[in-house]
Length: 417
Image (cartoon, rainbow, N blue to C red; front, side):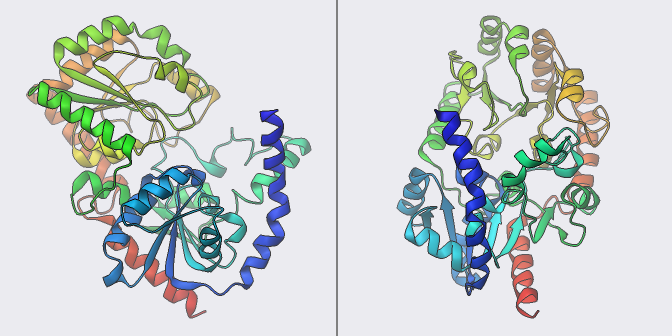
């Protein structure tokens, strides 16, 4: 029954196309900026931090930032904090989706409200520097590369909503600009600026607004550090993949937890929001292994991590800004590249850190990263710095103020046409 409901919802998107076309007739207020994330289900990523920046400076900026969400709890929590937010299907949510001039999001305009977005200035800040090929560059993606007429037909509703091109696509450096132009097939409107989410890693200029679950996660980290003055926070954030069953085959979690306890390490695991293995990971119960909510914003705890462990997730590019150690737990690399995603770069050259495939190798790598000798520290510092300067044009500058100015310039330019 649930699958039938999902199919009906999926195909019903086509019925909303007339509303999308009609929404072009609505006058739009250039002072109203709408924000949303992850299909309207999360308060996270670049939209979150640009929204917080704009909310904290709305008087001087002369704008009205509004968060739109399908999650009523998120709306209630933002409203309780004195921020402006409305539910997707509420009367105010619908009204501002029809009259707001700017849509700012990290996936597609449906993060806010696609059917009512006609005529809005759309800015896709995306959700990371891609190591993996994305969008049109991803030859394994059936939505962008259907193999036959039936697959093209199945993709029609999504290609009429999710895949509507944004007016502007954010790339974090001139080096990456051609990549985004290719992936989005939008060479005209890719522009360069840093990611607002990284402002929280390099500065305290933005006052973060923590959701209750995020506050509990941060409190747990602080409690661990209060108990262990020499404690380390290790953040494990694997990317999305079809299967993570190999993780449980490789890891003896009893042995691993004993190692963590001996070394005074809190191992925080943050699953991808779309992971198919949330249940298996949620069942992990050890004092030194903490499961973070997959839907929480990863940057809340990442800011406090001493070491990041990932595999093919783009989050390691952002973590370069902290100049802290990165480890790559790539136990299924061959299978991943063969069946899931091709990569833009040579993996070994684009990953400045130790690569490991076994639990024993992982424990040794963590120990080395916690206690680096001079050669180790110098080698990976240099590699991280070179890659950081390639991926970010202004790694030490705050991105939110610059991006706000760029969006305001886009509004002025669109108004003059």
